Image 1 (cartoon, rainbow over the protein chains, first blue to last red):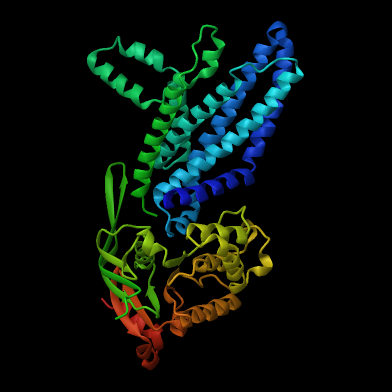
Image 2 (cartoon, rainbow over the protein chains, first blue to last red; image 1 turned 120 degrees about the vertical axis):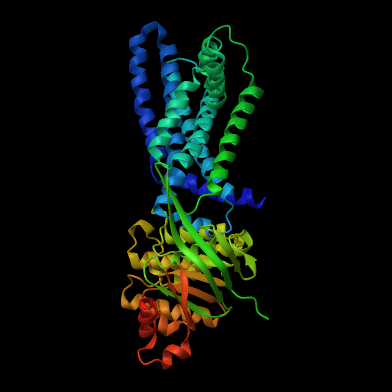
Length: 256
Length: 247
């Protein structure tokens, strides 16, 4: 109970930090400008205007949300360590796991707000062009946020192992990209020698399965079945929790 | 019998740093025994690298001991219970630059478990006590070093701790701020707080401390009481120089 209370205090501070550092506003303005560019693209696509507008906008929201979470997670703890503000926090009765959970939750909350604003802007643009967002719109944005959440948890873990924001960002980028090719990796591993297949299976376990969370493609395919929400949310939650638990363990052994 | 504010027993700290598979070990403290009594102002003197900051960070749970034990007011150091009784002022306190001092103090008060209804009152009182009230609406990013140090002291006091651990609290301050800090330390001590501070300013330590420990290469080289330095011809400075030069 006390850990949750402390985590919520840290989370609200992390949210305020995002707001005051203007990154949140920047994301919204940046997306507004690019969504306007999407309108131009849509006009050029003529008959496929709705499709282009929808895909471009949703892709942009996903990337902006991902960038916001991954950057936030890569720098959140490391910046506090570098500036030594962490001394004033950890010399208080603050459980280290609450600090990690709070920072992560605050960043996710900030990204959720930013993505919701961008989605609202996107829907307005679609309506303005006489197109409907479609039935799966909210589900797609939510799944994009889940992808960002998974990538963010992994980034927190990597940032504590590598103690460099740049390497954490690079690793997150690599894992995020590879995560979209887990099906292909499974296929390749079935054709490898036993030793190589074992290594490849291990890699598949470690890499987040972004394909599972990629509802944009699922909705685009006409034959797609209804999303398995239990699996999608459960996988995201378990993957993120395992990353955060490992991050908390590493952080609990750090000295300042 | 009163519980000591701080007890360090056989404290050893060895820093291990690994670079390209090569491990370098540096001794921070080697078997330090020290007791700070409740209600006293205790000074820690020593040359750079003598182990003053290491001892303080170990008492706060920011570092972990290699061997030995630390008790804060009878509680195991580093536990949440022990931390809630301690206020810490680091040598160079840093704050989130986008926050005002009021917002900073409220944040730290919340983390320290100050009841919700008292947070604003405590933050305002600490700003007043440390002379920051006229700057309440500025962002801490605009603060000078002296103002940051004052805010550092305010955050250390915001939860009304019983033990204050102050790392070089007057270094780099102007004479007026040094005077203000000294008066505040004496006032806090009269109110029953224990102060454990490190400093390079022997004259400051001499003015306010009841006892002083001189550290040398991570060990306790001398423990000096107020009466001893008052009766010594060269005061505490001479005792310090003689102690650190002894082989």
